[in-house]
Length: 417
RNA sequence: GUGGGUGUAGCUCAGGGGUAGAGCUCUUGGUUGUGGCCCAAGUGGUCGUGGGUUCAAAUCCCAUCACUCACCCCA
Figure 1 (cartoon, rainbow, N blue to C red):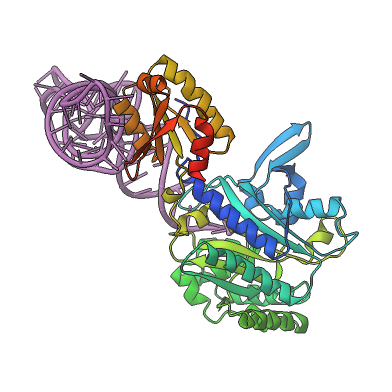
Figure 2 (cartoon, protein in one colour; figure 1 turned 135 degrees about the vertical axis):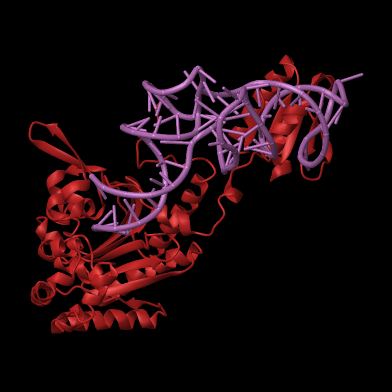
């Protein structure tokens, strides 16, 4: 038997209903917040991801599904959506008429990591990007938007953790101060952190090992190194969140794995997902549009982990399963012919109809109708055809009514609406 | 890439050198043409795969694969 690939999954009937309604709720929220949908392709030139995410990141270094399209032309299955959306924004010159654009996209991403709870090689993200707005209010609004989606989905125990990473001016100073600090107590750091110090020193702040956490108690905090502009921006974001009643945690140690982030960054965390505590992450990427060849336009965005959202959302998928309105149970050849005709007629009128075509006993047909949770069963046999009256059984009340053979479709339709 | 756990029926799992098990599901019957509950019978498995030890292996040993959790990293 051929099995599906490691880290990939089937979203089966019974759970797909939950995915659909989450998507519906997300779309509705994007609409009311003024977003339009964009659907970029799932593959891009490898260089796009290398330049935007960063050559030295784990994603680019070892997690991308990359293949050669033709000699020397490398293409990659997208590991995240922002790069593609930015590319499309620049390529179609969306900034020409109005630099301000709010875009969202929902779809699969691909990263070749070792799978575990809440982590797959093909996973889905709900993605939002805003271009052309420098104001801190948009930072706050985007966090509010994400939290609103969570609230609508009845997700419990989530809270936004926010931080500022500074800008081109202040971050290098902080980075240097941090590296100096780390150099002084190199012996106390774990091996991973020693490696991180050179590659991506900010990540050391995020280490979960108790020895490292202890060693870093007095580490310099980014918030102390922010330049005047960045401080002002961060303060305004916090104030705006306060005004909307959004509870947040200031996380001085919060850093992002992707190179393009600057200033405001945030992660929405939950306690109910095992080792994966992050259901959404995002932040500002003011330099990215320019980096990818566009004009100097600021940007900010976030990604919600769809798969993780499904796990922590307390809506019940079972109750969303589709059930037939009418189940047609024909007995005999002649009856099957009519069942097919009426069943198709009902479907064409927008009534969910299941035609039973097994030719089994009425008892077993009734059993199946019950299993499918059908509201009504329409019984058709020789007696009914002779008498010109069909039997329609309400499965809940057990009441049965005669339906004249003429105009079956119309009479059932009017009964159901 | 590294470590732990688990692989037995469609599903959830028990068993632990001597005939392959339970519950649920499914099929049929109890009701000549009426579902859920109940009762009865039945279908369904090379015990993940390959090798070794043994008179005998699902069970012990070795290898391997898959799944899973965790590290790393991230959504």
